[in-house]
Image (cartoon, rainbow, N blue to C red; front, side, top):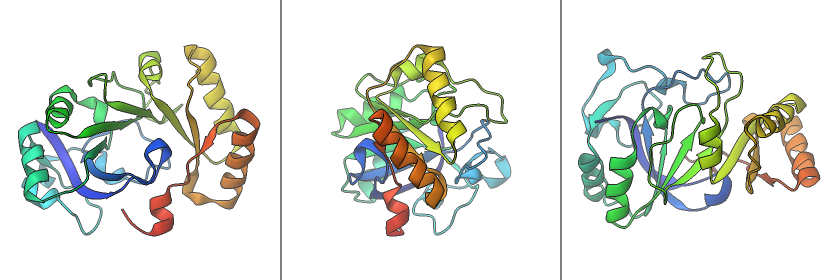
Length: 221
């Protein structure tokens, strides 16, 4: 069973799949403790906030309510809600706290593509055809290390930055893990002017790419 915080249909606003119609499957639970996390409502799994699956769909506001669901129930909900998107983004929280093979394989068998957005601090249990976005959470208060195996599995790296030290931490991680990803996206934290300027300059210098959270500029989920 997966612990679901919310499920909704929208446009992916970040990294390689920017502009792609997507179903977001947000899972509950994350011990990493990222300071600038914009989904802190997903951190704790408290039985007090357990609700029915229907109540986790199309939330009107962020909340820490969650529901249990099997892979089959998730697929059935997509059908019941008549979602048209065929790309599913599994995010959180930290989705790799779960074995994602069952839900991803079921979705693939029914014509969906899948993408995982993960901090890289848990082993990635997913099919080879699942696209993996690692947003490495380095030196966070939870004390979790970014795993070399996660970096090796990544199809793309998406790294939030606000200052030069965040760029340096990413380069140090590449050196430590021996991984040189082909796709590296820098994402300005909170769309701040200084962070955006730094991201643009660094992307040009290093031939990396810019991710600007298009959905936030558009005012959509």
